[in-house]
Amino acid sequence: MKQVVAAVITRNGKVLICQRTKDQPMPLKWEFPGGKIEAGEEQTAALARELDEELGIAATIGDKVTTVQHHYKKGGAVELHFYRVLEFRGELDNRIFAQIRWVDRRNLPRFDFLDADRDFVRQLARGHLLRD
Image 1 (cartoon, rainbow, N blue to C red):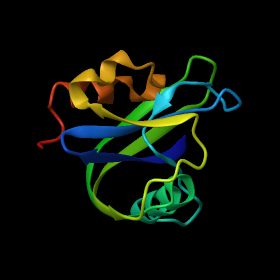
Image 2 (cartoon, rainbow, N blue to C red):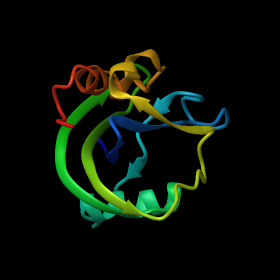
Image 3 (spheres, rainbow, N blue to C red):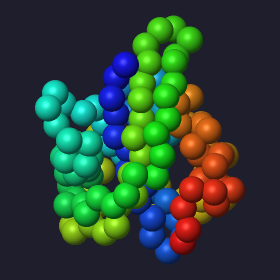
Image 4 (cartoon, rainbow, N blue to C red):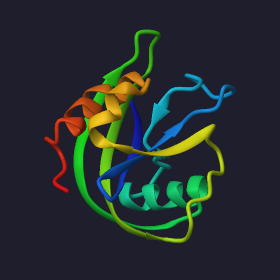
């Protein structure tokens, strides 16, 4: 099972979401920034590395929000570890995505997220996982 970390970055009641490019697997789907954990890497260290690579920010990683396991219909499985980002330094620099967007958490279900993210998105939109 592929181990993945994802960031929940909030600002003024909005959550940062990212859209994959048309050339990536599962093109144009929305997701949270993050990525695969390398061998021997701690989850929080992997997330900090990914946020630097994808968005050019130095993030302070907070508590784990939840862990989700998902099995894709065409094979493959992922275990996603969602962490809250407490703060970050640097300006957001979209280095790999089609677009990045700040969205009110209640509007998250309107976006076409990766299947593995959908239950988390619904819970987040209802205010069950994070307190502002």
